[in-house]
Every structure is written in C-alpha cells, then in structure tokens.
Image 1 (cartoon, rainbow, N blue to C red):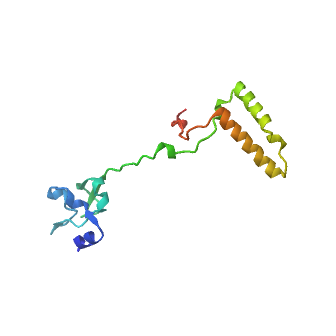
Image 2: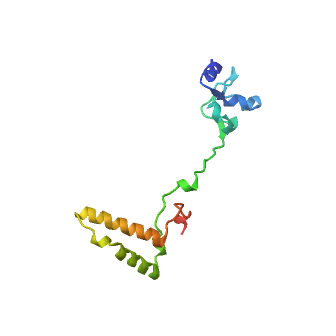
Image 3: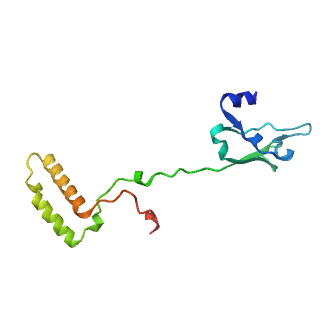
Length: 151
C-alpha cells in the first residue's frame, strides 16, 4: 500500500535508498517483533538532496520507537548580481568642483523658472536635479558593496 501511494504521487522512500544493517533499519522494537514502521517520503526531484537516512539505535523517543534521521544537503541558488538592486546616483562623489558644475547646469536648465501649481513645479525641479546629478556624478550599477554591516 505504501509503495502504491509513493508511486501514485511521484515520491521516493528515503529509507530504502541506502543499504543498512538491520539495527539501523528497525524503527519499532518490542519483545515480540522488530519492524520498520517509519518511512521518510521525498519528492522524486528532491531525492538527490538526500545524503543519508538512518535510525539511531540507542536513541529512543518512546519506550519502543527509535529516532529516524535524514541528512539533507540544501543548495542555495545564487541570484544574478544585476538583479539585486536599482541603479542610484553617486551622491558620495560630490566634490567642490562637481558641485559648481551641478550648480551651473541647474541654473542653465531654467528649472527654477517653471510655472503652474506647486506640485508641478516641484516635480519639474526634482526631475531636473536628478537628471543633472546623473550626468555630473554618475550612476551606480545597482550592486551593493557587500559587507555594510561589518564596519
């Protein structure tokens, strides 16, 4: 019945994949019988992650049950570095020379002479400041420096 269930749902019985001595297979033991009644089921696609499956002979959970352990190796997928962050303006590169150039560009753009309501003027001004800063200071590639918390 267990084999039919595992086959129907594409599962693998982890206990049966590794040859073991009887004392490493028996999960239930009393005076009359020694049997394997506990099973670990894995999806077939995850069966490669299972490194070992065994019973710890001297560890008992209840009087007659033994501890069943599975060793699993988990792989972490690395994300592409370009997808980590968004490009940002390098405000840390602002020096006296670059601030003068930025001031000259902003005054030349005429962003301060925008008209309309306050929201429109604010949006136009911030767009001009950001565009000028991108040209003068540059833009990062979106990848962080890494160990920011270590300082």
